[in-house]
Image 1: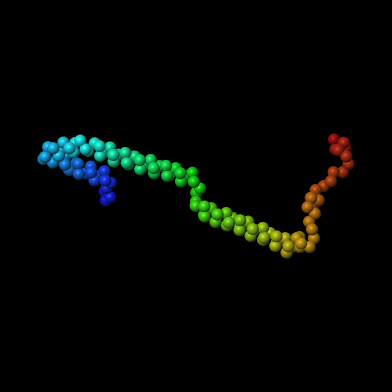
Image 2: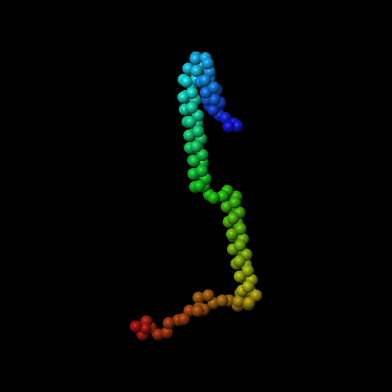
Length: 120
C-alpha cells in the first residue's frame, strides 16, 4: 500500500515486533495489535458507510448540476419558440394569419337543426 493509514503503520510495526527476540516487545505487540486492528477496521467501516451515504445522496439528487438543468430548460424553450415562430411565419406566408381573422369557434362546428325532441 503506497499511503498507509496511521493505524496501518502501527499495525505493521507491531507485527514486526511480534517476531522480535525480546519477549517484552513480543508481549507488548500481542497486547497492542488487537486494539490497532480494531481501530483500523472501525475506520474502514466508517469510510465505507460515508461512501455509501454519499452515493445514495447523489442518486436522489438531480441528475445534473443546477446550471446544467437551467441550460437544458433554456435550450428546450428556445426549440419551442423556434418551432412556434416557424409555424407562425408559415401561416403568415400562406395568408392565413394577419390579413383575415380566423373565426375560432365557428369553423368545423355544425349547429344542430331543429329541436332536441326531433332527434329521438
